[in-house]
Image (cartoon, rainbow, N blue to C red):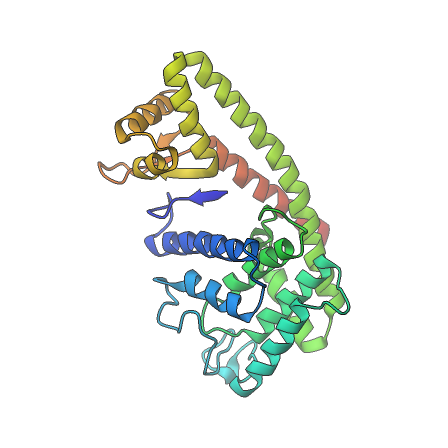
Length: 308
């Protein structure tokens, strides 16, 4: 599901909007390549990085190319950094080992364990000058899809990692300093359980919300107008925020027809306009987004209580 359209996401600064848009584009690019039979390898990882950072804060840091200079995590220089990744001469052997692990055909690793280890290995290598966290989180999804554990990218573990940022960084660092892989895998798998459980509950709430809103549309509008409004409502279940041009493209309807249907949904309180301007207006399926955010908060609360 695409949460936001390319143009602008409500409530986000312009730079963040571009990052959200690029994240979606990188996800779609990677999944399309995998479904087309392309392997999950270093070339695909570079492609994903190129899509991800294009036009964002990392656009001046060799998009789609592994770094040719030293980087570090935290601090102002390697000497006071929290973590210093492998230097450039060691980068190629480390990446080669990562790619071999991704294709561990001779001795298969259970897929969730493999995703945990591959993510930690990637973040430890830190092969790009910028965007390593975003690529590393996408790598989890791509690996689960490539291994057949997911048919669609429905396990949003990146949200769990970002919302438990301090514990996540600490857990990764303990792998690097103490070789404590067990605690990292435990942390990762707790996240999988939490996000999966929350995801099922959230999906049930979303299905109930969508069905209730469809009944409201059918009950309030005439047959022809209801049919058009339902088509627009379906667009909003795939793009929580969208615009008239984007909805026109998605449905194949004319702009006036789309505008009329969105106006009907506004009057029913199902969507609302969030940009307060004449051009490039964005409309938000508020209750749908609130349900998604509620599920994310629930997952975070569950994880926090399990660590306390």
